[in-house]
Amino acid sequence: MSAVAETLPLPKPETPTRRIAREFFSNPVATAAFALLMIILFLALFAPFLAPQNPYDLAKVTVMDARLEPGERGSAGFVMWLGADGAGRDMWSAILYGLRISLGVGVASGVVALAIGTAIGLLAAYRGGWIDALIMRLVDLQLSFPAILVALILVAILGRGADKVMIALIRVQWAYYARTVRGSALVERRKEYIEAAHCLALPPRRIVFRHLLPNVIAPMIVVGTLQTAHAISLEATLSFLGVGLPLTEPSLGLLIANGFEYMLSGKYWISFYPGVALLATIMSINLVGDRLRDVLNPRLER
Amino acid sequence: MVFIIRRVLQSLVVVLVMSLVVFVGVHLVGDPVHILISDDMTQEEIDRFIQRLGLDRPVHEQYFHFLGNAARGDLGTSFVHGEPALKLILDRMPATLELAFAAFILAIVFGIPLGMYAGLKPEAPASKAIMAGSILGFSLPTFWVGLMLIMVFAVMLGWLPSTGRGDFMTWEGLRHLALPAFNLALFKMALVTRLARAGTREAALQDYVKFARAKGLSPSRVVLVHVLKNILVPVVTVLGLELGGLIAFSVVTETVFAWPGMGKLLIDSIQRLDRPVVVAYLIITVLMFVVINLVVDILYSLLDPRVRLREAKA
Image (tube, rainbow over all chains, first blue to last red; front, top):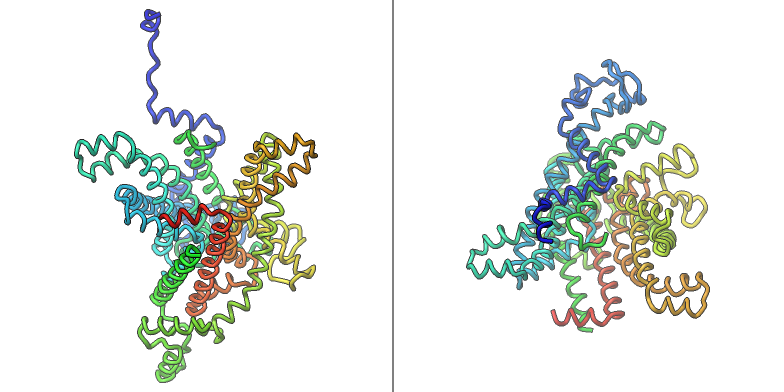
């Protein structure tokens, strides 16, 4: 028997990253969502090179093209496959630029909220005691109000502007991260490797950042993806309501709001296509996040 | 009793803190005087105007003045409409409550049967479609769904009106209510469907359901009486907590459908820097929220004594 075991080469142990990638892509829906998300990111990143016109360069846009139907040729010579809006902007170009702004605001506020929430969650879990109790009371209080209400209060207080909307989004999101990180950190803290690190008399900073943090990253990635989708949706809602991004930074929500008045007269494309772009973004991020949750944490219910 | 008093005191602190944050916060943005005065006013008139609105006094004095008045039910006078802010909001409240309750009922009427079906037959194609639909209900932005409803049912098919509100409980009123109520209900419907499905799957395995079957009761009686009764408790608890969420989200639906409720008033007031109305709306909404949470908490502690014990120990 032992001879057989020696002659057969053992399969190479799979690295965790490989295992996660293999399991992730074994699901066709998640793979399609991932591909779609990559296309959307590509379009958003390279919008200035891909868009047939710069929709905010007043020299390039002419009112002559206003409300052109999808598929008609604009006065600049290219076909407007998705039509034009009330000011004669090519909708496809406007959507590409809008994607950039929506994704930028969503991802940037998500990253900052993740950093702040993680720091607060780790602090609560590691210190415990009254600090933990105080932080968790704040988190509970925050989560007992719907995000849209808190965001509306904040933009009512802060006023309009990209920076203010981002502050509102961060303020709304940090509690989710803090709660997730604290929950997983509390579990990890009781494990032997942390005890061993304590026995080696490592400084708390080292224990928290080198030992505790890497082990709570998986749930953070999952919450991070889902929250980014949530942030994009929330920003679109605020912009649609006219209390979000200013007119100089037209996100998808603002494009949809601009087309709203035309919708009642049957000119659906000005609102419809930006909405499709928004949906594709939110849905693909959500599907990727759901699959990541299944793959990263097999203990969770599928 | 101690538990209830503690929770009431906690809620009062929350309302006070929120009122301070909102009041001070709103006063840091923009100067409403610039919007309200007309160009042909003399400096003297402007001064008198500012004095009349109390805008010349320091913020903390304005806050205590506001708090004192609020305790007497006076939340200030709208800069734009010249009417008491509280009256403006209370005038609009029935419209919002009508919308919220209609959505609440729709969520239950559609969500529970759909969820129970998906829970009883988890492998059926219809169940999979229901669950996929509930994921859509969770992730689609409310305002976008509202637009699509207008596009399909008002513009393309012409079946239902797209904006405004009819008289309460008339045919016209219901026709106006249908689209906004469905729009607002969609998110909660998805939530109820998921809760009902999870509850049904759990209940179907319990001994009392097996026993009811063994007794020879008809399948419909087992499902409609024994299973339904036991999933209603968690569903109603969660929905009670979500009632405040419906009122908050109605801001979006009301704006899309031009529904003349409190939410539309808030958005209009934010855009016109009408501070007293914004502050009054936020105070009233926070108050509603805190009261709903408090009532649900107390009911819960009455139903489940373990909650009280845990709280007493903490």
